[in-house]
Amino acid sequence: MGFHFRETMSGELTLDDAPYGSPPLAIRFHVTARSGPLRRYPEGEPLTLEGRVSVDGIAEERPLQGHLEIGLPLRRQLVYNFEFLGDDGTRYRFHGQKNVSYLRFSRSMTTLYGSLYRGDARVGRALVRFDLRDLPSFLASWRPY
Image 1 (spheres, rainbow, N blue to C red):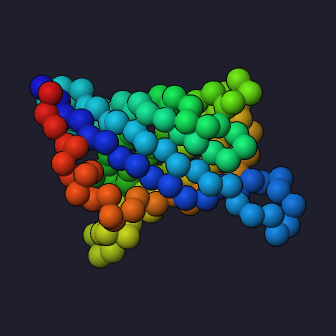
Image 2 (image 1 turned 90 degrees about the horizontal axis):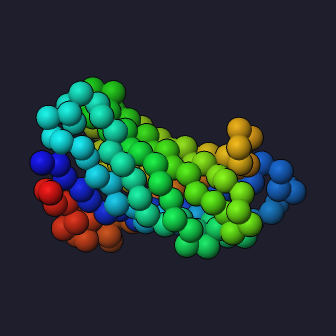
Image 3 (image 1 turned 180 degrees about the vertical axis):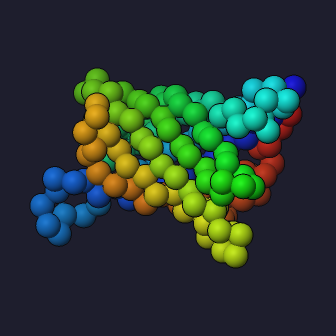
């Protein structure tokens, strides 16, 4: 037996090679995170991620696959890693991390700092947030299986 939940996050991606003053690109992803058997969860087994991602000019509602490492309560980190093919067929990888502060729990659990990579080269930095208005649907999505 395991569990799963759905999450949507959106924000901005600033390209590393963008001319000064260029507006950031919008980034948004919807994921379903699934655990393995619950007995492995305390051992740190990552959850699998599947979903869709959009990045202005790079990917429009493209499938993604990856994993989510939840290092709570001790490591106080949630690490998101996923890959997707851009609209032009190029493989991209997103790596992001929530740094959890128990004193600022709500803010730290809703803010994800990340980077987008094409191959091994970083293309840009992202600031992505979970909208608290989505909290009821997020909580309702938690299910055992």
